[in-house]
Image (tube, rainbow, N blue to C red; front, side, top):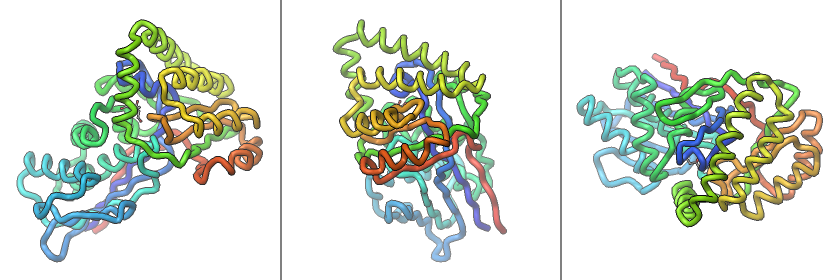
Length: 320
Ligand code: MEV
């Protein structure tokens, strides 16, 4: 038997960072995936291998490298709950660049947890997978809001009010538009960036409070515009939201150059998505302007990916 579970990456359209303090956020899945395969292991061990990190470990033997600890944590939790694990070979493969803000760690832990559960005969129900993934996310991010896990699990578009209030958002995506994910080439730890923002909040609570209120209005307005399919206006809101991200301190020259050039060349909206201080910029545009914009920012990024938003979340298949 071979199990394959795939979970998509995500982008945050509105509300990153603000969501950590309970402000609503809007996110969608994108068609980049992490896939975990589980099959019998001939030597009787539990072997894990990450193709993208080119590293692995044998469970129960020596402590894995730090980057692999979230996977070990999930195996520990599953075996605590369901008893000792059978032999298995677990392989994980990802299209999602790591530490960019595309939710690679959440998609990895979701596909990993679901595939291992399915292999041992436990149905990977959303609540259970979410709980395991969140435990793994705490190792990676310290204080995750849970939005990455929620969107990778549920897919589509969501309006996120907290781990226990995730509302599907019936956005009317329009194929006349497209979305670019543009990498800055600079990776950073989400946990550290979140910490810096929270420190600024503590230094200027009255000012930051107003910025957070504005972010809340932006998410609420964006929700309505997306449901109505008003994508030009969504683009304008992305630009306003980016202004707030600049003021909380997560913009860097590399993100700003990409954003200003995209807008100058006709993009409707451009903003940091995810933690910032590097990572990615998302750009909303009409398809007819795609080549102009891609050519115009090509010298600023080695990673320009056109993505489709709103695809399904976690999916598993079994081959006998
Ligand atoms: C990271 O993708 C989004 C942040 O808001 C952190 C979080 O929500 O856990 C920056």
